[in-house]
Image 1: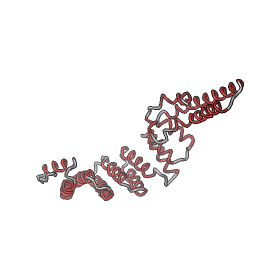
Image 2 (image 1 turned 90 degrees about the horizontal axis):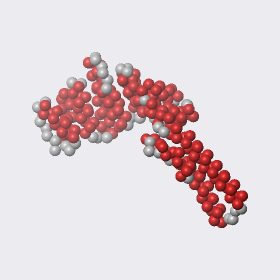
Image 3 (image 1 turned 135 degrees about the vertical axis):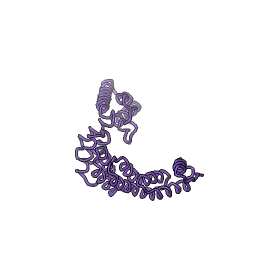
Image 4 (image 1 turned 45 degrees about the vertical axis):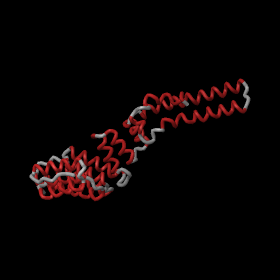
Length: 257
């Protein structure tokens, strides 16, 4: 078993070894262990002739060699996420889920093309929301803000989770829009996303980010109210300290704790 598994050792400590299904490294050598156990049992309970022992050992050597060579071959596929998902995509070219993982592994232009193809192949798959958000981030970096907004809405329509709402707001915050009025509209949309996220999971971070966006949108009184709420409800949070500093600068002294 050790001999047949040995070729996998060069990559056993790689990043891909610690993801789900990493036990795949053992699959090719487990049967060798079973054969060896059978050999032990046979030697214990049956007397074999010299020629039979030679044949048995030759068969065992052949099985171990095949297993070792096969494991060595797979080592080049399993060495990292890119080679793993490239190989998987060759075998499953029409799987939206595989295309999403392939896109994650490569990122940038390759990832964008893979995600677009994943959506084209299926309008509903396990990672539809994450795929749309990934495309939205790409479009935002390319300054295609309307397209980014469309994919954000599509992602949230698929699955409006706390994480997705926060990520959607963060993508909008990255928009570099020179037009003041357009910028304000997007900021208000991000505030709505954070407000919905807060309903799902109340925490100081959301309140602090909401207050910052309100200030950018010119909603000063609303920002002050949110900061005061943050300090009152989460006095031990680091964000309460930040909020108190912001209020002090505005002459609204409220101390956390």
